[in-house]
Image (tube, rainbow, N blue to C red; front, top):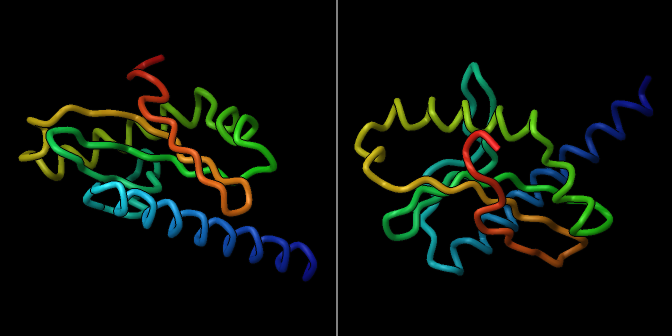
Length: 123
């Protein structure tokens, strides 16, 4: 039991570090971070950012390859992110005038890849 909790703790630390690196990466690319680990009853979004007139909902995945990380964001994850994004926007109605985009940032070690417009709403 203790072994599982240690493995879980390591995974959580890796996830927090991955999200922090992704946030730094976006900031360096002139994105403004609006929220980190936004949670609602419908789901969770790792990062919510804005650049220009677009709100970006970002899922961060760390895996052995960028391809497997991107594939890990399957349709159930996408629906969860979409629903949570609608919750976020309903709490911040002034942001509803902006465009909305779904991105994925994948990490392999310290290598980051930004998959812009990774899917469309409802795909």
